[in-house]
Image (cartoon, rainbow, N blue to C red; front, side, top):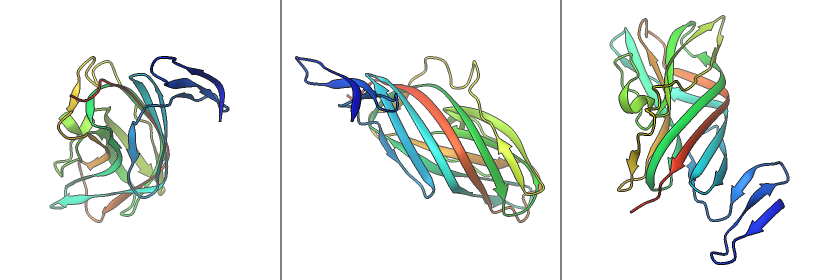
Length: 197
């Protein structure tokens, strides 16, 4: 139920604020949350769109590369088809590791992380490679976009095939026994949807 709502007379589109102060537009199809333990609130006004993810024991499964490095990604969103310009992202997550304490890297990308122990290119489309540490069984992961990531004003082509978003993790040392990362908390992502052709 909208608290403040306007209707455009020629297009019959509604936009405004709901009772919680959330901005909405009635004709927006942003996409859908994906993954066990992943919930998503979607906000839009025209092409400007934002996603608030709430993770509850969301698990990233890691693939080992020998005993030294590991990586993997959990798909958390399936975008509506179209050209997208990422604006930025932040996270406020707690994390644990089935294999014990240690350091790791995390990011948000349009591709799942490989096993080389680094996060680059399409593995960091929305949030850069961010170092975090698990100590005494728990840690925090606070990703934050920078002036270079995501690349300012650079579109990502999801016109032919809709884009996906992944929560990525990588271990760059001592991957032995570390088979998964478990996350709880929130992620915010903002972007511009330029439409399909």
